[in-house]
Length: 528
Image (tube, rainbow, N blue to C red; front, top):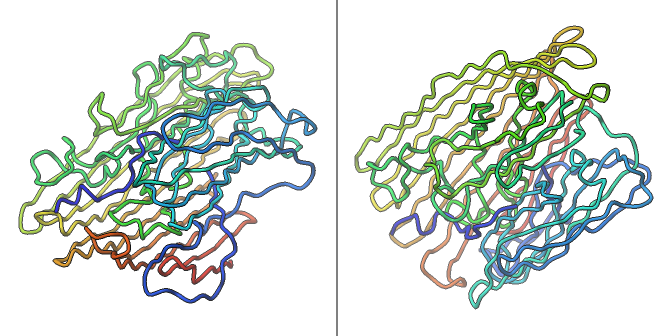
């Protein structure tokens, strides 16, 4: 049996930082011998979005039932009674689905700006409900005026796949003064021809890219692809190394390691994800690129082409979605901010995959890349120079047997970034270290029992001027088994999953652990 047929259950070809909410669990429960027709609603150990006290206003942004690939089209009007400035804006999506359905991807755009992207859980026959929250304060300028709204969670409903995805999205606005450093003055989508025209007084520019490999093909699990010469069901000419690059007028402006998302049918085993999703599965965070060194070029009042390329994917090949927003902070005291790109150093790209044949095939991959860009802007408060250094590494070992009845991966990705801003006074440097890990094996026995054992890690640290600002460690582990090629009621599926999410920073600590057995939440522990 070729494992490609079952490696992932994601069938939606269309796409969508948040927190998944769940009902309070029973701390003790009878655990069934195997999965039944119902299980606990989806839940994660991530912290909830903090909300300020004081006056708030709520509007409904979208309400739809997705059964095909027809987008929801609506309109948005700002709230009344909460002023035109908000200390925080919180998006909440409530969803429900029952029956049989694959995991699906979706997006939500307001005024052409993508503000939310997520995937969906797979339902129980009896039905599930879940909620996702996201802080969308950074899109406040877009939300101050009436806008068109488009949302789509591409879905297929027929005699076999019966689950209609029912969602409602609201925005809650909290009156107050926003954090100017975190809230841009404008957020601009690219035009249909892939260009953007920034305000001529932009003094800081940051691009965000919602990059996901998806759509049901091999790029959905790009980290398992192999070069053409190796005998495996998913091929990629250059192997599994991927890098998300952003270019301005054809010039490389930023590099990043993509996050290795695992959707809720992934690794051949939906029983791993029914209650606890993998990291970021319901929280598709955008990659951020500081483009401030290019502000002198972008501030000429002309449209400039902004392009995203994924290293390892041939031009024109489908399988990745990478919509772009461009956030700008403007100089209120100057109509035109001039500047210049002063440094542009691109390191050699390392991308090596070595196949070792045998009864157990092995593919060892090493990838690395570096980029340094620097530039200045002459603002009303003096000349400010921004230097961005980013370095990426990827190491992985992929093992499989003929027929792919054993298939395993041990992989690590690192993405290290340092941004130095030097203006009046001392220079300030912020260092961000991101590390993603994946270690798992799927085996299929002679009795068609499929077992997946998997650990995923999402870790990051932010150090500002030598002081730790934030540390994240989100670790998921799972072990699930089921029988292939039999009716649903004969799968005899069992599974144990857990997640521990730790977040620390000045005056903040979150540490929560969850455990499930056969869809029953058996542990929900919090403490710092």
